[in-house]
Amino acid sequence: MRDGTPTAASPLQGFVARHAHLLVLTGAGCSTASGIPDYRDRNGAWKRKPPITLQAFMGEPYTRARYWARSLVGWPSFGAAKPNATHRALAELERRGKLTLLVTQNVDGLHQRAGSRHVVDLHGRLDTVRCMACDWRGPRDAFQRELSARNPDWVGLVAHIAPDGDADLEGMDFANFDIPPCPRCGGIVKPDVVFFGEGVPRGRVDAANAALAGADAMLVVGSSLMVYSGYRFVRAAVAAGKPVATISLGHTRADAIVTLKIEATCEEALEFVLGE
Image (tube, rainbow, N blue to C red; front, side, top):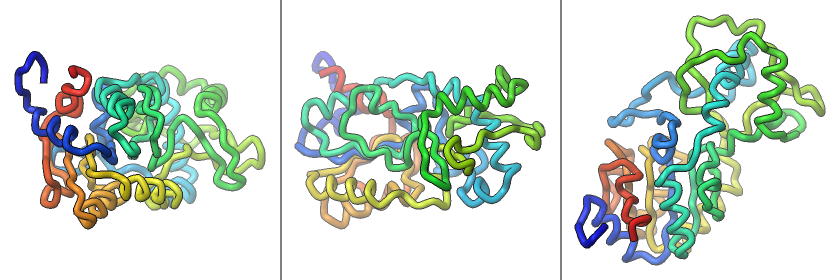
């Protein structure tokens, strides 16, 4: 609300005001205003082919080369993305003491860059890479430099950025793309994110459940909740009798069980926070 004028976000403003402690779950819709595409359309269907699975990445060298080639091209844009008004509004709610925890399904680190401190990166972070053999970890920027040095012909290619920090490269031959091995043991390096077919680390789930136990209500921002790793927390909140509000453009998996649904962009719905 600005200048005393009610807005479409006023029901959400009331929801936030009535509940002192919120568990917040965020999804791809939070970052679209930062230039990072989302995964699904308004009906919850994939806009493109589903993301790569862990099994394909680990078991198919050509698929692994295709992933890293696309990532080499897409990373500069993804890595340069900046927090938007949604990230800043949620950081402000944390500053006011309204959040028990922010659990994000995003892998872009933009909540932390906006100032949020109590964040669980449910699916990991794309700015780190790890070895699947010895668990070595390193910064994505350094790995990017090594990728570029080994594959100079791929540097500077222009393509549409995709949701996972990669890029749409169609009709390319990835057979000779050179992937750096782990510098410690020579093993396979992957981004330190949870791929489809890979479990979310138990500690992250436990932290989210503990925060939910201490929350009065739950707020879902920019997620269709089609992936069970996030949807489970909504189910747990409803089972515990806690109100749940969602902000989403279109259908979500939880439409039938939530207390309040706001159909708006995340930045529009949360505009009242920065305007207060």
